[in-house]
Length: 525
Image (tube, rainbow, N blue to C red):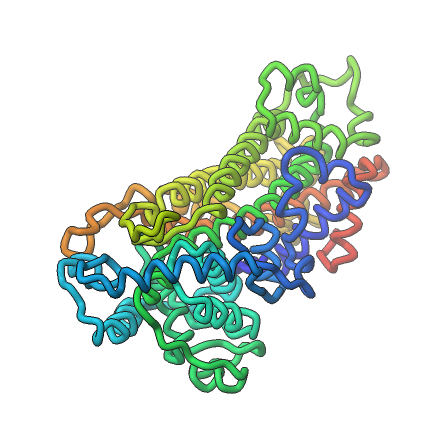
């Protein structure tokens, strides 16, 4: 993950999921082994070349280019589609009638007809004026994902750009040059105009880029070093390069890959906690879970049953002598909450899949040669999905923090020392680790407030309703970071508690996680 996750959280999360799933069992179960399993760490794409054609790229393609540094190439089918679409645009450019994006101004200025002699300047001016973002640089992986997805739309031929322009875009991406894109500026409608304009600016030799070593360089200088020639934009090309939902979509796809891993990790952490808190897995029984047939709930319960199988700790308090009738909700209802999060993630995957297959531009070149205005650039589907995921993330984290808190209270921990301290009073144990988790959960609740309902009109009321999908996906990245850290605290706490249950031994899967954490340098008792 490259969304601000701390090194300690990353190590705990990655090692725990890997250790529990090393035999292909618990961590591989359920509907959460797709894009995340293939590319959550970016390693899968390290030496790949992704072929970009008129069809939809896969989530794994996005992860490979964004995180694995994969290069790209346009397929022969893409080149044919580009030539066909461009022929339609050039025919319209010669028409005496105005055509939006080809021979007119933009947005509220679309009523002005632009003479042929001014159209190259029009496209250049469009890119320059729209590259008006501000704030911190967007992460390299986000910019690379955005560029791949824009290239994918260009490759459909529906935007009408020349093949040479698309080839230059692909070459910029393959050269490892990452345009500097500020964080603020997109309203998610018409697509991600400002972020994509900063990329297009670099393509024309203006603005700044980060090279493969991360050095900040003027775009013109970096292009020259890489043997690339700045593009002089022709009719419609400036608009075609900036009018898409690619930034939102790229962040959503990357978030889905991360969340696949984090939900597996959440199951691991919960299983360790239930075991170390002397809870029961009886509520996870297959026949009970089947009474409420949500697929995510079934997957989470299956994971939990597998993870605690063979636990001597759990066996020690089974039977009629156990005084506890039922566990607290944060232990008993794990499949319901983790399962709902999985189902939310599955819905987001459907949304992303549809968007990956889309050709977003306005106007768009139709198969019968029209250049037609449309509203497909509106980011509502992506904004809604991102906001929904942020809600699920906040709730999974809130439940995790409650389990962590139970460990530290001797009134609820069934014989564990206060705060799991070695010498309570002299040693505060994990007291403040719970503070950290609580503070992050509070922040996650704020991040769960939807961005997609907060429309603000723009462009002289021509664009009077916008999606704020960029804001929704930006905060989703921060939410993922928070969830990783909250789960890391729970893993650390549960591992300590399992040690304190000795000589009783944990399940093989949870013991493997504890040992992996120790091997990664995470402190023990």
